[in-house]
Length: 169
Image 1 (cartoon, rainbow, N blue to C red):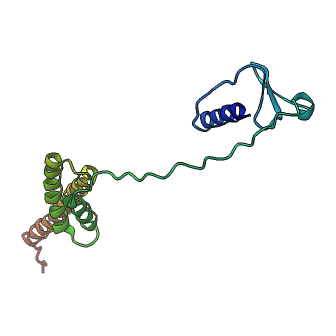
Image 2: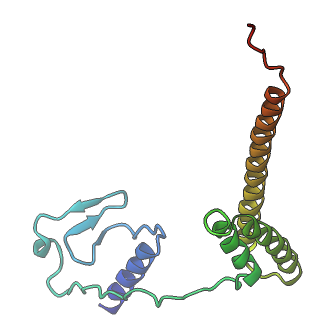
Image 3: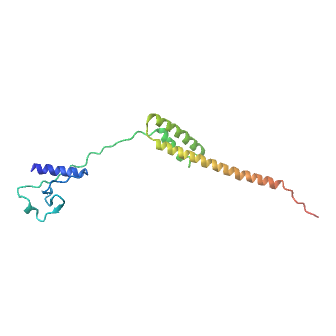
């Protein structure tokens, strides 16, 4: 009785752990409704007729789930978090200053992360990308407006220096 119960518990534990264990040939399942013939499980039409009546089939009791283990990675570098925040804010609230601060803090954070092994390298890189992208877009916008206003000033200067035809009497 205890040997059958122990074997059933081992099979249950192996099955729940994902280990493939084949039971020995000629054995009933723990619930008594299946027969293992060595190659496959076959359903038993009348379980009480095939099993000896003195043998009691034990019921498997669930062992429950293992306790939850929380694992924490290394702390994120504060400058990396600040770099990401300023990189995001530079697109919405503080255009030029936010981009510059994001780039400076991102480089400082990457240096500290290399030295100390802290987490947050991805945050620092994201802050750098957002900061540099914002500075590039800001530079292109300034260049565009300089070309537009410079072209307009040149055009107006050219129009102002053109001779005006006088009316002929």
